[in-house]
Amino acid sequence: MGTLTQLMLPLAAMMRGDLQAFVVSVGIQALTAMLQSERTELAGPRYLHDADRRASRGGTTPGKLTLGGRQVTVRRPRVVDRDGDEVPLGTWQELSVDEPMNARVLEQMTIGVATRKYARSLEPGRCPLRC
Image (cartoon, rainbow, N blue to C red; front, side, top):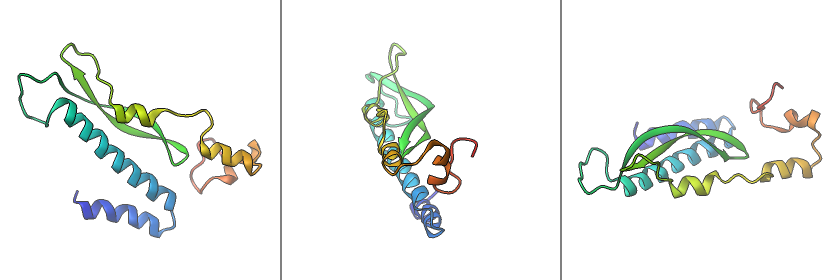
């Protein structure tokens, strides 16, 4: 998929008024690029054989991050060392630290949203519970 197409899909979502989805989509694209760059730095370019390499690519695994005030699932790239142990990605570690009270929850509490009114305070179609 070309860069223009990648930008047009989120822009189309924004035109429908879903700015939150646009921001999350662009954020995930940027995060994916950062993680891939770090993996290449640790394990070398894809398909390049290097006998001196200390780590290699280990596929991907689903991971969760808080983005835009809610949890999203992201394919986290894996890097493994010669012993088969996973090498942590600094970018992932930095972004996966989830504070117990993120800004969205604090905002909801500040404006006085009661638990029974929580679903009404979210954007349409965003309720993680049975609303």
